[in-house]
Structure formats: C-alpha cells, structure tokens
Image 1 (cartoon, one colour):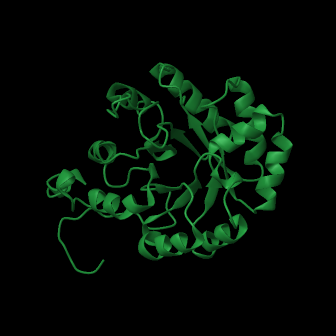
Image 2 (cartoon, helix red, strand yellow):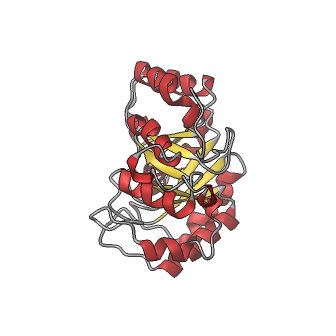
Image 3 (tube, one colour):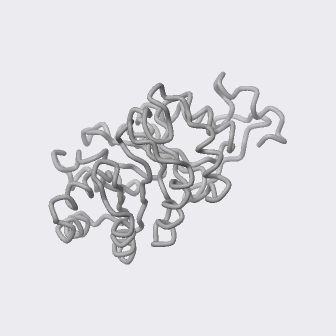
Length: 256
C-alpha cells in the first residue's frame, strides 16, 4: 500500500484460497488486458472469459498468454462447457482445454437441463486433469431452487472433485442467489453457510450492494466473483473499509 492506515483489515496474499476476486473478461482487447493487469493485477486471483466469449475472441491464444505471463489463471465460462455438452461434444471440450493449456475449467448447468449425477461425472472426469469450479443455480429467474437443494448439490459437487462451488447470479446479478431486483436471498445464503464451508464457495456478486452485503456478513476475505474489470479496485476498497459503504464496519478491529 502507498501509506499506513490503522484498523484496516488484513487481506490474504496471493496465491490465496480465501479472499478470492474472480474478474469477468467479457471481451477485453489485448491492450485492455495489459492495462487491466497493470492497474489491478495484484487484486485479481483468477479471470473468467464470460460465458462463450472465447469462441469469438480475436487473438485468443495471445490474450491468454498475457494473463499467464502475469500469473493470473484463466478459465472459460460454464456456458461454453454447456454448449459442448448439449451438442454431445464433451471430448472436444477437453481437447479445447488442452489446446489452450488451461489449468481451470467451469462445470455448470445454468442454461441446460443436466442430470445431477451426470454433472458430477463431468466434474470427476475433468478434475483428473484440471482444477474444477462448479456452478450451482439456474440462469432462469423463474426457476427457484430451494436451499436444501443448493446445499445438497454443492456438497455432491465438492465430493465429486470440485475445488470451489460457485453461487450463480449471472453477470447482471439478478438470478440464483439474488432476486430479480438484485436483492440478496439472505435466508438462502445463511442456510447454505450452515453446511458448506465459506472458503469453498465463490459468490458471484457483480453489483456493489451485493459485494457490500457479503463483506459485512463474512468479512474482507470473502470469495467474490463476476467482478467487472473496472470494479476490481473499487471492490478492494470496500474490502478494506475505505469506501463509504463499509467505512465504519472495520474501525472496530473486533469485526475483522
């Protein structure tokens, strides 16, 4: 940091397993990636190339190399996995991971109907070669999954080999963990946390109010994802109690 402030939460250091920030790249150019890393690289733990944007991204290999050179892992969004699976091309998907030398992969079923046992098989198979993040929750706002089902699926996916489970919200933050207004389904989150260790969960929280809510609930080192590149540094200030939304929250260090 550039100067000293007292009563600021201690952030975990990279490489870390808690306090994760997953940023979403929805089509940055190579120059934008370079600028993004220059400005925010210290605060980004992993990058997701949103949904299936990697299919149409120009200079994909070169772009991935920029992230790799900066020590920031990248994975393709779960929708791409679903696009391959629905076309009966799972083996082709694995070849894509190999082609681009990806060490992480996301398994999801937010856009397709997939038997959960089959989803766990995919997780188990992929986890032999890469680190798997599995996403729980639907992209269909009308599909409400009861808390016990979230817990059951998260645990089964961790048991199948997932490194972390992702709580679905889409890039807009208006489904899954959240109501269509963006409000957190508080009871759902709190019930999940009674069974699933918080360090095993990556909460998609693209909206500032959602980030604030999770930080106040779980502290500065909560795992948060779907963060827009231009929101990474603002998020870090929220984590540290240096923005109005959490300004008073960490002044009493007993809260840290």
